[in-house]
Structure formats: structure tokens, C-alpha cells
Image (cartoon, rainbow, N blue to C red):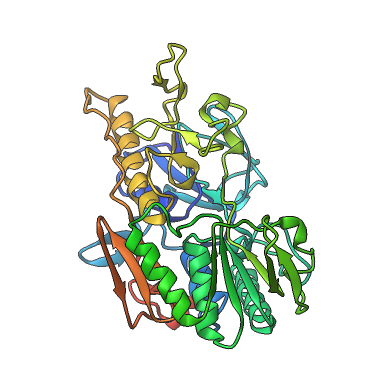
Length: 428
């Protein structure tokens, strides 16, 4: 018997969290339901390798993973094509331009996928659109002179990374602003690859990675000093001293911190300013977007990862005005969870499980409570040169040597259905 497709779970964003939601739902949704995944990129952008591949050539193609196996089955038999009835699930390369309570507007119709007008109705929505990334790895961001104009394709993504490699190679000196993971990786990779190139790391706090153990800071700063990186802590860059030509010329500039300290550099990499990408929900859930403070712009969620808003009762109570709308990943203020791919992945599992429970509640006596999300202990792995890394897992801090130059890209390819990175797949 053929069951009409009448119900839709829309997943916005197919990166670390959104893809996991889609994979979980595609194998578990009941008959009559489908998952529709929407992403503006043709391939998964593996952001964690972008800084490395902006410095070292020959691996750019590994940063962009095809979505064609997004709905493939994973099990003991390996990765298998979906069953014929699971052809109901869709991946759409498009941009979402508006969201209503039970529908969204797309940048275009996609007739080949059965989307004959730029509208999609949904019963559940998972918002996994992440954040606007810092400028050096923001393919969609403002385009500086000489940069590649990105269009969401793998070809242009590879061109972007090769262009970044050329700028770094030709720059007589480099200033990296920001002592988070991205800034640390840029500074140490560049100095390791180009030992004679002056590299400065400027960070506004007295500690790098302040959310982690003090020994992380100590090991990272010592490694940077061993490499010859000039480390300046506790100072902020005076952005008015940065000429607009800084990202695209080989001329050196005299830059200043707010205290007046001078720094000479030809290339400036601003590895700060990550902002949540939540404006699309402002029309229907304005009170769910945090208005000010250090978490400004993030979406409030409850423990089930449903988008929440302050209750009229006050006293920090929350309610869910639209309990069919979930948020995960970098866009969500998820109880102190670090903005990281592994946390987004975990949140995706929770959101998928809760959507399935809500669906079953509507079709039978199912009353199982929704799964509650608790963040994992802090964990991170940061490269500190081309073959070394420092990590924290829970309270444990350690270093790793002999790290692969491609920063273990094969792991993420496996997640997206490619158990081995075959040459034929790498260039799809």
C-alpha cells in the first residue's frame, strides 16, 4: 500500500548538528513522514580544517564533503544506499529567506525535487544554521579585493582556500587577532610552515582558551614561543589602524593596539567576532532571541532543545510558544555547551529523538517524556603546529605528536557516509 507523504520535518543547515538530525530521522520516521534538509552549500563545509588548508596546499578538496550519502543507512554491513521507500527524504541546496510558524520561504523553487514554488510547509522544524564565522574562514562573508566570490559550490570553496594560501605565502608578516582555537591554529600553522615569517598573535585576555584548564594556556603559549610567534596578551587591536588593503596587499602596515602599542604586519587575520545566525526567527519568536549580554543573539532553548521564551510569570521561568520548533548547535544557548561540532552532533541526536517521541504521541498512547539535554564536559583539540596538538577531555590535558597534515579529514568523511576517502569521491 502506498502511503501519501503528508508530514514534513524541515532541517535548516546540514553541518555537524543538522546532518545528524537528518540521518537519525531518515532511518526512524514513520510512514507518511519525510525529512527535508536545506543548506545553501552543495557540500558539507568541514570548517575545522579550513585554517589548516588555508596555510598548507594539496588537501583543499577534503574540506568539502558531498551530501549525496546523507540519507544512506549506516550499520554492521557498512554504508548502504537507502531503501526505495526512503527516497521520500530530500536535500535541497537553497537559502531560507523567511520562516513562519508552519512554513518557510526559499530562495528558489526546485522543480526537480518536487518543490514547484519557493515555499515549504513543515510540521516540525530544526534550526541548525549555526553562526557567522570569523572573516578568514567565512566563505560567504564580505569579499575583500582579490578574494574569491563564493557561490556555495565545492569548486569555488577550493579556489577560496587556494587564494588564502597564496595571501599567506606572499605576506611578509602576519598579525593574528584572537586567542581562541582558530587564532591559535592559524598562528602556529603559519609559523611552522614559514619559520622565517614574522607572526604575531594578539589576544584581548590574559589567557588563551579561558574556558579550559590553565595548563592548556601554558602549553599553548610555550609552544608558540618555541616556534617564534610573538604573543601579546591583554590588549585589543585598534581597528581604525587597519587599512582596508591589509587583507590583500604585501605592503606592511604599522598597526596599533588601543593602548598605543605598535605592531608591524602586512596581513591581518581577524579570528574574532563569531555571531549567531538567528535573525530568521526574529519575526515569529522575537522573545526567544537573547537581546543583550554575553549571549546576545543566541536562541533560548529548554532541556528538550525546543525554542523557548521567558514566561510572563517571570522568575526565570520559560515556556515554548511553538513546541514544534527546535534549535541546536552554535545558534542555541544550550546550558553552557561549548560552540563545537561534537556538541552540535549530540544536540542533534536529542532533537531527533524528541521529535520522534512527539510524533508518536500524536498517533497513539505514547507518553514517554522528552529526552533532556545535558552538555558534555569541556573538550577540545587544537593544533599547535603542523604535526602537534593539545587537547582537553574532561579535566585531562595532554599533547599529541605526529598528527596528520590533513588534520584527520577522513573522520568527518566517514560521518557523511564515506568509510574510506577514495580518489573518485574526493573530487565529487
